[in-house]
Structures are given as C-alpha cells and as structure tokens.
Image (cartoon, rainbow, N blue to C red; front, side):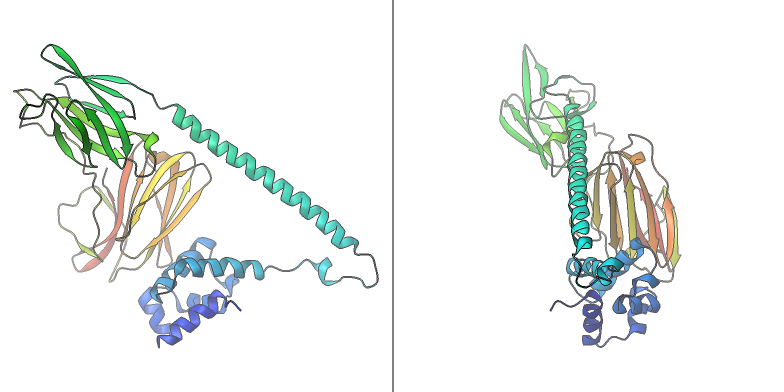
Length: 368
C-alpha cells in the first residue's frame, strides 16, 4: 500500500533522529505547520501557495524526492474530499436511479471539460501561431560601419560591401547558438560572445557581431544581435555597449560589495532562509528562471498561468514582457509584492540573499 505524504515525511524525519523543534529551526518553517503537514491537517495550514512551498522545502530538507511528495500530496487532497451525501444514504431494494443520474451528469461533465480543454488548447496554439506568424521571414539587412541592433531569424540575409562586390551571410540556426553561413564556411557564435567574422579569407575580420540573447528551446524566437562593419577607424577599439548576458551561478550565500546598484531590499535578518516566488501571467510571455545552482528552465506561458518555485539561496528570472507578470516573494511567513515592469520590456532580475554588515538581506537586483 502506498503511504501518504504525511507518513513519508514523519518516517523520514524520525529515521534521521530529528525532532520537530530542530526541523522547524533549520527550515524556518513553524513547528505548528510541520505538525500539520505530517498529520495531513490541511485545513489548519495557510493558502495553497504556502502549503506547496512548505512541502518542497521540507522534502528537500529531509532529502526526499520533492516531485514524489507533491504527487502524494495531490492524491491525499482528492482522498480527503467529502463523499456526496446521496452515495452514503443509498436506499435498499430500489432501482439505483441516483447512480444512473450521477453517471449521466458525470458523462456530461467529462464531455464539457473535454470540450473546454480542447477550446483552450486551440486558443493557446492560435496565440502561439499568431506570435510566430508575426516574426518577419527572410529579411535582408545591409551592414556598414554604423552599429545596428536586430533580432534575426533563420534564412535572414546580412549583406556587406567588400571593395567591388556584395558578400552575403545567411542565418542557418538560432537554437542555443547562432550559426551563420559565410563565404569561409559556417561561423558559430555562443550566447554572450563578441567575435570578428572573416569574409574574404585574409587575416582579420571584416565585421564584428555580439550575440545578446537566444532561446535554448525554440529556434523560431530568433537571436538578438549587435553588429557592424569594421573599419580602420573603429577596428580594435570598439566594444558593443551591452549588458552581461551569461548567467552566473550563486554561492550558498554570496558576499556583496558597496558597488551593488539598483537594488531593493525586501527581507533581512540574522540568517538566510528559503524563499518562494509566486508568478501569475496576465498575457503571453516567454519566461526563464534559474534556482540556486540548478539548470535554467525556459517556458512559453499564456494568460492565467501560474508558476511557483522555491529556492534556498536565490532565483534569477528573465521575461520577454515585464508587464505581463505579477510576482510576489514569500519567506518566513511574510509576503512582498514585486513591482511590474513596462509593457514590452525585456527584464532580467536576481532575487538573492547577500551578506552585508553581518546581516543577511534578500534583495531584488535589476540585471537588465
């Protein structure tokens, strides 16, 4: 028989010789809430977002598989649902009309849910196709010594004049890395890389290109680049004025310095504790996040969707439309709403713990 999530949590804690007082102190979760989780007294816990955040933190603290614990939690919620009264008071020796009626309505309900799900999926796909169809196809850009910033897509052309001929580059790939077909072969540019590209086979490059942003999961989103033709006036001296795009790993709690700018302190205290980010989306958006030292997760979301993640040290978030999202940070029983950005703004933010003046501070830093 499969054990419930509360039994699994309690057994794991007892097997490690940890009492509830110690667990509460080391997870920053109230002892009362830990008892409710182990006894599965869900009605005594705060909202759904808090419950999920507590479960994820407690499962990771006990070195359990958090995905399995969340699955057991969902099953337990279903099992705790009260059975309909008409099923408990079934009359004897009568034709079970209530079962027939219940079955009839169940069929109608299933059919309705299926139809609504189909409509929702079609609407979501239509929105995605509309977004994709709005992307320009096979554009041609003429490049000279004036720096330009563009989002380029597969099959786009970049033309450069060399002496008496026009040399053409073709975009061949925009997934994870940018690949350009040049007269000298395929040139591969990685995210955050600034490189000179050779067009005539002679020493030195003729153009310089910086790859600012590219998707890891969808080539149709193209690549954001800065580029220009090199000339005797700018060669060796020009660097594109761009923001840092490479993601950096955060230590358990990083030491900060006095140069941190554009930050907002939302929590502080004598120690760092786990935090939960709750994000709700008002419209279509490309959203990427990185928790602690784990791999980045990138997803395409539509209106009404919700993403909840929990971290011990920090979270980096990237969004294609800062005004499409409302966010709040939850930690130690406190909740802080984060301010939305501007419509269409590409925004990168770090939400992380830093140590400053012998105190721990949870700060929001605008990286973009």
